[in-house]
Amino acid sequence: MACVYGFNPTIVVSSFCPPIPFIAIRPVLSYPLIKEYDTCPESLNGFKYKVMAKIVLNDGEELMSLFDLCHALHSIWRPSLTWRVIPVGAQGFYSLQFSSYRDLVKVASAPSYTLQCGLITIVHDQLDANTTGPAATLVRWHRPPPSWLKVNTDGSSFGTSSSCGGIFRDHRGKVMASFSTQLGEGTAFEAELAACINALDIASDRGWRKLWLESDCTRVVELLYSRSKDVPKKYEGPWMRVLDRLQHMEFRVTHIYREGNRVADALASPNVQTELVSELLYQDTIGCVNLRVR
Image 1 (cartoon, rainbow, N blue to C red):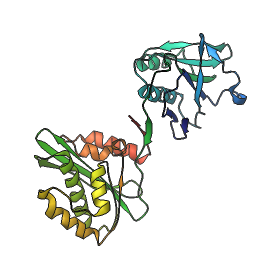
Image 2: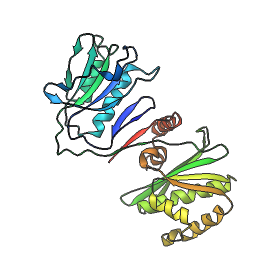
Image 3: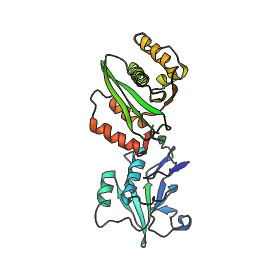
Image 4: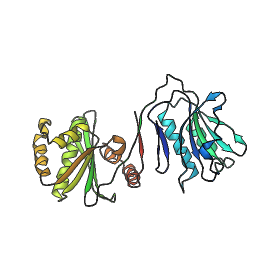
C-alpha cells in the first residue's frame, strides 16, 4: 500500500514495487478541484497505469518542491528507469519524458515552462511483473520533552583508527554540548561504546539528571537498556562507572536509524566538517525528514 505523508515538502513513498507501471498524482492548488481526479486516463501511450498516490500541494509550498518529490521517487526506484512528468492543462494530457533528474529540473526551470495549471503525474513506464523494489522508511530526529536533554551518539572506525562524536540538545533543539574525539585503534562497536560512555560522563559531570540517549548501534542500545556488563575488557572500568551513574539519573535509551542520526555521524568523522554539522543541525531543528531505502 502506498503511503502519503503530510510534511512540507510532501513526499510519496511505497514499500513495494507495483507489478504494473504506476502514477503519482499531485494536484496543484491553483487548478480547479476535480472530483476523484476523473480526468486521469486509464492508459497513456498504450500502458495501463496504477495510481500510486495522490497529494495536494501544501499551502505556501513552492512549486519547485514538486521536483523534490520526483527526486525522492527516483531515489527509491531504479535510477536506470526513464520517467516522465505529465502536466494536465486546458489542452488535456501531454507528455514530457526525461532520463535523468537533472534534465527534468533544467526544463522545469526554463521561463517558458510553468506548473501553474494542473495535475502533475510522475510515471514509471518500464516496470514489469518481476521487478522488486526496496522498502522506504521516513526517518527524522525528534526533540526531547521539556526539562529533558537528548544526546545522540555515534562511533566510526576507519582502517586502524576510530573516532566518536555526540551532541546534546534540549526541547527547543538548542545545542547544550557536543564532542568529537579521536580514539586511536579500535573497532566500530568500541567506538560506539566509547561515544556512549563519553556522553554519560559529560551529562553526569554537568548535573543533567534527565537524559535521553539515542544511538544507531542496536548492540549499544541493548547493553544500556539491560544494564549488561558484557563489554570489551578495556572498557569494563569506564562502563561500570557509567552504569553506577545511571542510578542517579532519569534515563531512557532508544535506537534511531543512521538517517536520523546524521549530526552525531558527522561529529564521529575523523575529519569533522563544521559547515556540514551546522547544516545538519538546522535540518533537524526544522524537522526535515530523511528517506531510509533498503
